[in-house]
Length: 207
Image (cartoon, rainbow, N blue to C red; front, top):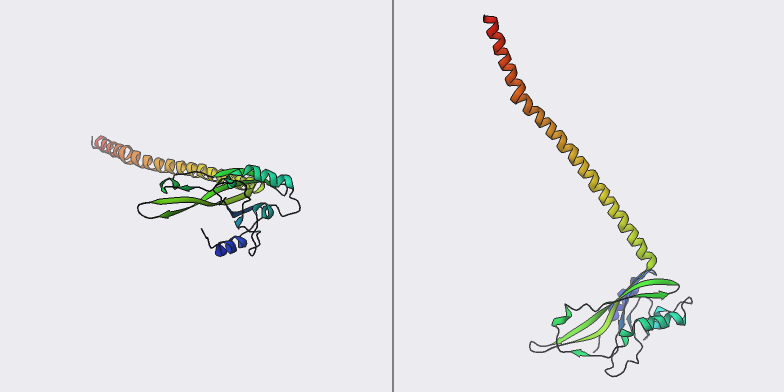
């Protein structure tokens, strides 16, 4: 199966941050052997004119070491699973086959999610699906903590804002209620009593 990836590769090259980035990695094309080194399909640090392996691209900085590469390989054994063809496409929507790993690179920890990419093909009578790669999203723990802090601050601000709005609303309703109550008492008690008192006074004067 041939996939034209040049446009995707160019797009990935344009969107790169050290602490948050994403890439595409291939799956094992063999149906018999798991002796496979995953290839890069698209990566911000790749050489677009050369075929490269995931370990060489992800760990190309001097700070990286063989231990980091080996840990990555051990944690991502699912990338080397043998190639299979499923007899249906119906389950793809319901499947949740993502893997979440903590990858150590350049002295930093990255929370990394591997989401499978499936290709579905066939006709109205027969459908088949194959896993052709993984979309990988990687974010450093430092940036994750920053996002978490920003969200917490935003939530705290929202809670404070809601509390203030509730207090203002209660005060506003209380003022309106007081005004209406005063108006009600005046028109239902003070004015009638004043009229009755006036009538009584006039009656006393006539005597």
